[in-house]
Image (spheres, one colour):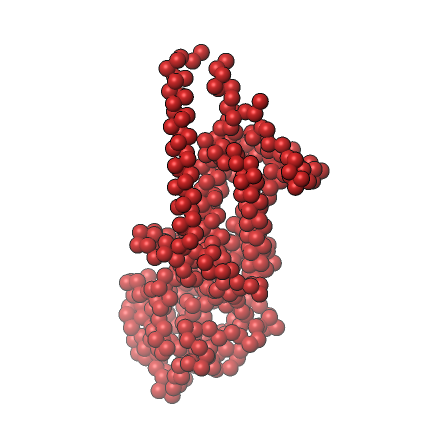
Length: 206
Length: 250
């Protein structure tokens, strides 16, 4: 067996890496333009600083939002299809028990979470990545509910009507942003995970 | 078994790869930062704007495809009406245009057989219908109101409009203008309305008439309509020409 080969393990398949970075780019556009749209008629008694938003004004923000929408939906369909069909989700995100999540989140907070093998996600990671997928699905459907409350009124009804669909859309965004922030902080704390999401490989800790 | 040659290339490839990676990361990060810092300027960039406008046209097509001429907007009981119904325009409420109803005539133009102008008493004498529907603004807020008037498809049939044409354009007393697709114009809930909450439309809600389209966003519902025309050429609109999506269906 070749020595150099033994040091490296394949962690992320190419499809996962590509869809990951398209998602990162798309979510950045969706969130920043969405914040500008929010500012046109804030649901809550606060505004998002315009410096953090995209689009320059409402019309520009809507253009960005409804353009990036297609990119993210197509990307999401590719990712979800691959994840289910290839068994990637089953292998990487399951099994998942509340007990294990609790244990690993506590461990992470104490800075005692092991990351020797990057190809295996700990329970905190599994929960976070699964939650991002759930948030994304809720965002797409609550978004459709807001965009098409007549043509897709059956979807709008699931969210309890147009006004509550707006609230759901905003809350799902908030949760997604929080998870992404934690995700980025974790990458900064364990920096060797970063090149792995580009090259797909990680050096095996021995 | 690996040959020396392949493992050597693999090795140098790794080195080059790692240098390229670093460069890529650096560039990627600065590009991301640039995009965040200058979101406004980015939108103004000519090629970016071209792409966004192209996507907006694509979204016009997607929405026209999604539009079901038989799908009705939900209707509400009168108890659900929002009071007071919000005023919204590109000017403030004390700048509302006052139209003189006595001399008023709705002008017709374009692909219409009978272009005879219509006075208000003539319009009021047409069969009237009411709806309580949700008005949704492009800004995000919504409000429920009650409008009454003549079904627009009946009016179009009465004046002999060419319903095979693509668009109907509207010119308003407040210099507002907009246009809609024929499929939406023929939708059973698209009404040429003269009353709000059973009273003649007050100026702030669009006297003498407002085209109420519950399948479109609020700004696609022109108020103070002075003339309308049927055409196959794209007429645009006040907000649409500034970048708001033309179809804007809901």
